[in-house]
Image 1 (tube, one colour):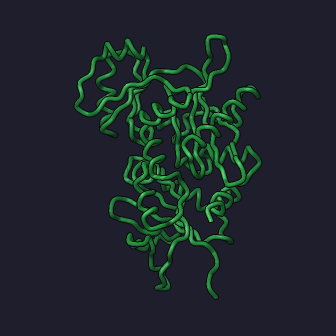
Image 2: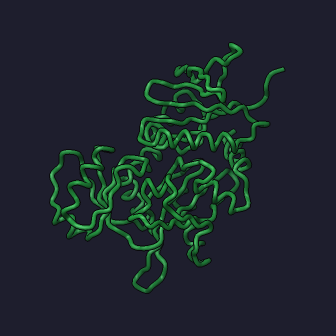
Length: 332
Protein backbone atom coordinates (compact mmCIF):
# COMPACT_ATOMS: atom_id res chain seq x y z
CA UNK A 1 0.00 0.00 0.00
CA UNK A 2 1.28 3.45 -0.93
CA UNK A 3 2.33 5.67 1.99
CA UNK A 4 -0.14 8.57 2.03
CA UNK A 5 1.91 10.70 4.43
CA UNK A 6 3.51 13.85 3.05
CA UNK A 7 7.34 13.82 3.01
CA UNK A 8 8.70 16.85 4.85
CA UNK A 9 12.31 18.07 4.65
CA UNK A 10 13.56 20.15 7.56
CA UNK A 11 16.27 22.08 5.70
CA UNK A 12 19.04 23.22 8.03
CA UNK A 13 22.75 24.01 8.24
CA UNK A 14 23.79 26.66 5.77
CA UNK A 15 27.03 28.50 5.19
CA UNK A 16 26.95 31.16 7.93
CA UNK A 17 28.42 31.32 11.43
CA UNK A 18 25.12 29.92 12.73
CA UNK A 19 25.33 26.52 11.01
CA UNK A 20 25.32 24.59 14.30
CA UNK A 21 22.54 26.73 15.80
CA UNK A 22 20.46 25.83 12.73
CA UNK A 23 21.02 22.11 13.42
CA UNK A 24 19.63 22.67 16.92
CA UNK A 25 16.56 24.38 15.45
CA UNK A 26 16.12 21.39 13.11
CA UNK A 27 16.17 18.99 16.07
CA UNK A 28 13.59 21.16 17.83
CA UNK A 29 11.34 21.16 14.77
CA UNK A 30 11.77 17.41 14.33
CA UNK A 31 10.50 16.89 17.88
CA UNK A 32 7.46 19.15 17.22
CA UNK A 33 6.22 17.64 13.93
CA UNK A 34 3.24 15.28 13.85
CA UNK A 35 4.94 12.00 12.83
CA UNK A 36 1.58 10.25 12.39
CA UNK A 37 0.75 12.71 9.63
CA UNK A 38 4.20 13.30 8.08
CA UNK A 39 7.41 11.48 7.20
CA UNK A 40 9.99 13.95 8.48
CA UNK A 41 13.66 14.07 7.45
CA UNK A 42 16.44 16.45 8.46
CA UNK A 43 18.41 17.73 5.45
CA UNK A 44 21.78 19.31 6.26
CA UNK A 45 22.98 21.78 3.61
CA UNK A 46 26.53 23.13 3.64
CA UNK A 47 28.27 24.30 0.49
CA UNK A 48 27.98 21.49 -2.07
CA UNK A 49 27.33 18.86 0.61
CA UNK A 50 23.57 18.24 0.87
CA UNK A 51 22.51 15.13 2.74
CA UNK A 52 19.77 13.60 4.89
CA UNK A 53 20.76 12.96 8.50
CA UNK A 54 19.21 9.74 9.82
CA UNK A 55 18.64 9.38 13.56
CA UNK A 56 21.17 6.52 13.72
CA UNK A 57 23.94 8.74 12.31
CA UNK A 58 23.77 7.43 8.75
CA UNK A 59 23.45 9.91 5.90
CA UNK A 60 21.95 9.82 2.40
CA UNK A 61 23.07 12.16 -0.37
CA UNK A 62 20.50 14.59 -1.77
CA UNK A 63 20.13 14.71 -5.55
CA UNK A 64 20.12 18.46 -6.20
CA UNK A 65 18.36 17.98 -9.56
CA UNK A 66 15.06 17.39 -7.80
CA UNK A 67 15.91 17.44 -4.06
CA UNK A 68 15.23 13.71 -3.72
CA UNK A 69 17.28 10.94 -2.09
CA UNK A 70 17.51 7.16 -2.08
CA UNK A 71 16.47 5.68 1.27
CA UNK A 72 17.90 2.62 3.02
CA UNK A 73 15.44 0.37 1.18
CA UNK A 74 16.80 1.61 -2.15
CA UNK A 75 13.68 3.64 -2.97
CA UNK A 76 13.63 7.26 -4.12
CA UNK A 77 12.07 9.68 -1.63
CA UNK A 78 10.61 12.82 -3.21
CA UNK A 79 9.69 15.66 -0.86
CA UNK A 80 6.30 17.36 -0.77
CA UNK A 81 7.39 20.33 1.34
CA UNK A 82 10.53 22.00 2.69
CA UNK A 83 10.58 23.59 6.14
CA UNK A 84 13.57 25.96 5.97
CA UNK A 85 15.32 26.60 9.27
CA UNK A 86 18.69 27.85 8.00
CA UNK A 87 19.85 30.95 9.87
CA UNK A 88 21.85 32.99 7.34
CA UNK A 89 22.81 32.12 3.77
CA UNK A 90 21.46 30.37 1.69
CA UNK A 91 18.16 29.87 3.54
CA UNK A 92 17.43 33.34 4.86
CA UNK A 93 18.41 35.49 1.88
CA UNK A 94 16.34 34.06 -0.97
CA UNK A 95 18.90 31.71 -2.54
CA UNK A 96 17.36 28.46 -1.31
CA UNK A 97 13.89 29.83 -2.02
CA UNK A 98 14.88 30.48 -5.65
CA UNK A 99 16.07 26.88 -5.97
CA UNK A 100 12.82 25.52 -4.52
CA UNK A 101 10.81 27.79 -6.85
CA UNK A 102 12.70 26.34 -9.83
CA UNK A 103 11.88 22.75 -8.87
CA UNK A 104 8.33 23.68 -7.77
CA UNK A 105 8.67 22.53 -4.17
CA UNK A 106 6.49 24.39 -1.62
CA UNK A 107 8.41 25.83 1.34
CA UNK A 108 7.80 27.45 4.70
CA UNK A 109 9.25 30.93 4.28
CA UNK A 110 8.48 34.03 2.27
CA UNK A 111 9.54 34.29 -1.38
CA UNK A 112 12.86 35.30 -2.94
CA UNK A 113 12.38 39.09 -2.89
CA UNK A 114 11.08 39.25 0.68
CA UNK A 115 13.84 36.96 1.96
CA UNK A 116 16.55 38.99 0.20
CA UNK A 117 15.09 42.22 1.53
CA UNK A 118 14.57 41.13 5.14
CA UNK A 119 18.12 39.72 5.15
CA UNK A 120 19.54 43.15 4.35
CA UNK A 121 18.68 45.21 7.42
CA UNK A 122 19.46 48.55 5.76
CA UNK A 123 17.32 47.86 2.68
CA UNK A 124 14.46 46.56 4.84
CA UNK A 125 14.45 49.56 7.18
CA UNK A 126 14.39 52.06 4.35
CA UNK A 127 11.68 50.15 2.51
CA UNK A 128 9.40 49.90 5.56
CA UNK A 129 10.02 53.53 6.52
CA UNK A 130 8.14 54.40 3.32
CA UNK A 131 5.09 52.61 4.76
CA UNK A 132 5.21 54.61 8.00
CA UNK A 133 7.00 51.99 10.12
CA UNK A 134 9.18 53.53 12.84
CA UNK A 135 12.84 52.54 12.42
CA UNK A 136 16.13 54.03 13.62
CA UNK A 137 18.13 56.31 11.34
CA UNK A 138 21.06 54.46 9.81
CA UNK A 139 24.04 54.77 7.46
CA UNK A 140 25.32 52.08 5.06
CA UNK A 141 29.04 51.52 4.48
CA UNK A 142 30.51 49.17 1.88
CA UNK A 143 33.83 47.41 2.28
CA UNK A 144 36.66 49.76 1.29
CA UNK A 145 34.55 52.94 1.43
CA UNK A 146 35.94 55.91 3.32
CA UNK A 147 33.90 57.41 6.13
CA UNK A 148 33.91 60.43 8.45
CA UNK A 149 33.53 59.32 12.07
CA UNK A 150 32.70 62.86 13.25
CA UNK A 151 29.96 63.22 10.62
CA UNK A 152 28.49 59.86 11.61
CA UNK A 153 28.46 60.89 15.26
CA UNK A 154 26.86 64.23 14.37
CA UNK A 155 24.07 62.59 12.39
CA UNK A 156 23.30 59.53 14.52
CA UNK A 157 24.60 60.58 17.95
CA UNK A 158 26.23 58.10 20.31
CA UNK A 159 25.98 55.28 21.16
CA UNK A 160 25.35 53.55 17.81
CA UNK A 161 25.12 49.93 16.76
CA UNK A 162 27.47 48.64 14.09
CA UNK A 163 26.14 45.48 12.46
CA UNK A 164 26.61 43.46 9.28
CA UNK A 165 23.89 44.73 6.92
CA UNK A 166 23.35 41.37 5.25
CA UNK A 167 23.72 38.66 7.84
CA UNK A 168 21.19 36.61 9.77
CA UNK A 169 23.17 36.26 12.99
CA UNK A 170 24.32 38.15 16.06
CA UNK A 171 27.94 37.79 15.00
CA UNK A 172 29.85 40.95 14.16
CA UNK A 173 27.49 43.30 16.07
CA UNK A 174 29.01 45.96 18.34
CA UNK A 175 27.64 48.75 20.48
CA UNK A 176 29.87 51.80 19.93
CA UNK A 177 29.89 54.49 22.61
CA UNK A 178 32.26 56.99 21.02
CA UNK A 179 33.78 57.76 17.61
CA UNK A 180 37.14 56.17 18.57
CA UNK A 181 35.46 52.76 18.84
CA UNK A 182 34.01 52.97 15.34
CA UNK A 183 37.02 51.65 13.38
CA UNK A 184 37.51 48.41 15.39
CA UNK A 185 33.74 47.76 15.37
CA UNK A 186 33.64 48.18 11.59
CA UNK A 187 36.54 45.74 11.17
CA UNK A 188 34.62 43.10 13.15
CA UNK A 189 31.39 43.68 11.18
CA UNK A 190 33.14 43.56 7.79
CA UNK A 191 34.40 40.08 8.67
CA UNK A 192 30.76 38.93 8.42
CA UNK A 193 29.45 41.02 5.52
CA UNK A 194 30.66 43.34 2.73
CA UNK A 195 28.03 45.86 3.78
CA UNK A 196 27.77 47.28 7.27
CA UNK A 197 24.97 49.32 8.81
CA UNK A 198 25.60 51.94 11.47
CA UNK A 199 22.33 52.42 13.29
CA UNK A 200 21.21 55.06 15.77
CA UNK A 201 20.56 53.86 19.31
CA UNK A 202 16.96 53.61 20.54
CA UNK A 203 16.50 53.55 24.29
CA UNK A 204 13.68 51.40 25.54
CA UNK A 205 12.37 47.90 26.19
CA UNK A 206 13.31 45.22 23.67
CA UNK A 207 10.59 42.77 22.71
CA UNK A 208 10.21 40.03 20.11
CA UNK A 209 6.95 38.74 18.68
CA UNK A 210 5.97 35.95 16.30
CA UNK A 211 3.20 35.86 13.73
CA UNK A 212 1.85 33.67 10.95
CA UNK A 213 -1.16 33.81 8.64
CA UNK A 214 -3.20 31.26 6.75
CA UNK A 215 -5.86 31.81 4.10
CA UNK A 216 -8.50 32.31 6.77
CA UNK A 217 -6.80 33.60 9.89
CA UNK A 218 -4.08 35.73 11.48
CA UNK A 219 -2.18 34.42 14.51
CA UNK A 220 -0.03 36.86 16.47
CA UNK A 221 1.63 35.28 19.49
CA UNK A 222 2.18 36.95 22.88
CA UNK A 223 5.37 39.05 22.81
CA UNK A 224 8.55 38.15 24.70
CA UNK A 225 10.41 40.82 26.67
CA UNK A 226 14.19 40.54 26.45
CA UNK A 227 16.11 41.60 29.55
CA UNK A 228 19.89 41.21 29.52
CA UNK A 229 22.73 42.59 31.63
CA UNK A 230 24.92 42.50 28.51
CA UNK A 231 25.27 45.68 26.48
CA UNK A 232 22.65 44.35 24.09
CA UNK A 233 20.98 41.10 23.01
CA UNK A 234 24.22 39.62 21.61
CA UNK A 235 25.21 36.05 20.75
CA UNK A 236 25.94 35.10 24.39
CA UNK A 237 22.63 36.55 25.52
CA UNK A 238 20.79 34.77 22.70
CA UNK A 239 22.36 31.31 22.87
CA UNK A 240 24.29 31.01 26.13
CA UNK A 241 21.55 31.95 28.55
CA UNK A 242 22.80 35.42 29.49
CA UNK A 243 19.31 36.83 29.27
CA UNK A 244 15.95 36.87 31.00
CA UNK A 245 13.02 36.22 28.66
CA UNK A 246 9.59 37.20 29.91
CA UNK A 247 6.58 35.86 27.98
CA UNK A 248 4.14 37.53 27.75
CA UNK A 249 6.07 40.82 27.83
CA UNK A 250 5.22 43.36 30.51
CA UNK A 251 3.29 45.72 28.23
CA UNK A 252 0.08 47.64 28.82
CA UNK A 253 -2.92 46.15 27.00
CA UNK A 254 -2.92 49.18 24.66
CA UNK A 255 0.77 48.77 23.76
CA UNK A 256 0.45 44.99 23.39
CA UNK A 257 -2.39 45.57 20.89
CA UNK A 258 -0.35 48.23 19.09
CA UNK A 259 2.59 45.79 18.74
CA UNK A 260 0.34 42.97 17.52
CA UNK A 261 -1.37 45.25 14.98
CA UNK A 262 1.97 46.57 13.70
CA UNK A 263 3.30 43.01 13.35
CA UNK A 264 0.25 41.95 11.33
CA UNK A 265 0.55 45.12 9.23
CA UNK A 266 4.25 44.51 8.42
CA UNK A 267 3.48 40.86 7.57
CA UNK A 268 0.94 42.13 5.02
CA UNK A 269 3.17 44.89 3.61
CA UNK A 270 5.85 42.30 2.82
CA UNK A 271 3.37 39.56 1.87
CA UNK A 272 5.19 37.13 4.18
CA UNK A 273 4.65 33.39 4.44
CA UNK A 274 5.05 31.03 7.39
CA UNK A 275 6.20 32.10 10.84
CA UNK A 276 8.14 35.34 11.14
CA UNK A 277 9.46 37.02 14.26
CA UNK A 278 9.82 40.79 14.57
CA UNK A 279 12.04 42.50 17.13
CA UNK A 280 11.03 45.92 18.43
CA UNK A 281 12.19 48.59 20.84
CA UNK A 282 9.37 50.17 22.83
CA UNK A 283 10.50 53.74 23.54
CA UNK A 284 8.73 56.85 24.83
CA UNK A 285 7.62 59.71 22.61
CA UNK A 286 7.68 63.40 23.61
CA UNK A 287 4.33 63.02 25.39
CA UNK A 288 5.52 59.99 27.36
CA UNK A 289 3.45 57.50 25.35
CA UNK A 290 4.80 54.14 24.20
CA UNK A 291 6.29 54.24 20.68
CA UNK A 292 6.76 50.99 18.71
CA UNK A 293 10.05 50.94 16.76
CA UNK A 294 10.96 48.02 14.51
CA UNK A 295 14.50 46.62 14.88
CA UNK A 296 14.55 43.71 12.44
CA UNK A 297 12.58 40.81 11.00
CA UNK A 298 13.59 37.18 11.31
CA UNK A 299 11.99 34.97 8.65
CA UNK A 300 13.58 31.73 9.89
CA UNK A 301 13.34 32.18 13.66
CA UNK A 302 15.09 29.78 16.05
CA UNK A 303 13.08 26.67 16.85
CA UNK A 304 14.86 25.00 19.75
CA UNK A 305 12.44 24.19 22.60
CA UNK A 306 13.67 27.30 24.49
CA UNK A 307 13.55 29.68 21.49
CA UNK A 308 11.14 32.62 21.44
CA UNK A 309 8.56 31.12 19.07
CA UNK A 310 7.99 27.85 21.00
CA UNK A 311 7.79 29.92 24.22
CA UNK A 312 5.20 32.22 22.64
CA UNK A 313 3.18 29.36 21.14
CA UNK A 314 2.99 27.79 24.59
CA UNK A 315 1.99 31.12 26.19
CA UNK A 316 -0.80 31.41 23.60
CA UNK A 317 -2.16 28.05 24.74
CA UNK A 318 -1.28 26.42 21.41
CA UNK A 319 0.98 23.51 20.51
CA UNK A 320 3.91 23.64 18.07
CA UNK A 321 2.63 20.43 16.47
CA UNK A 322 -0.72 22.05 15.59
CA UNK A 323 0.89 25.32 14.45
CA UNK A 324 3.28 23.52 12.08
CA UNK A 325 0.44 21.38 10.69
CA UNK A 326 -1.68 24.53 10.21
CA UNK A 327 1.12 26.24 8.24
CA UNK A 328 1.91 23.27 6.03
CA UNK A 329 -1.66 22.28 5.21
CA UNK A 330 -2.40 25.91 4.31
CA UNK A 331 -0.10 25.52 1.29
CA UNK A 332 -1.87 22.54 -0.28
